[in-house]
Length: 159
Image (cartoon, rainbow, N blue to C red):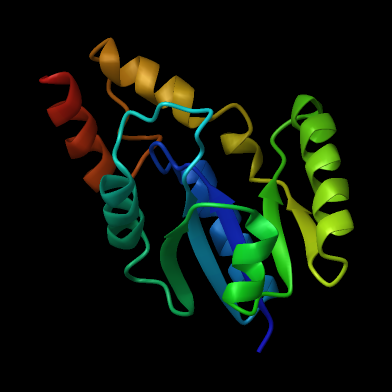
């Protein structure tokens, strides 16, 4: 079985993330969507909330599982027996950072490939920070995130 992981903070999950997950699912037998604990970021949602929103958003898809990890992505890839790491590229500005991470991951684990996938053009501008900012300003985010995320954002910002 050819399994990959798709790591991210998913704070919150967007339709752009889901688009990447669907693309990965077409290429591989199984996708493990992995919620990362990043000490350099202060997320709006707890780890438990982010895992829940992903599970709810992806419940209708086969061969997709959701978990979490704290540590090196390549170590987690080995733990779940993945052959690769999926990374999304929205724009050229994403490439330099992602390229450096891919090279470091290759240095740490030569057996784990990094696979770059681009979302559909309708999602190239979309990211979690924009969604959080819109929601905080009481803007409608229904076209950007699944319903479970819309409700969670309303609760966070008391709209």
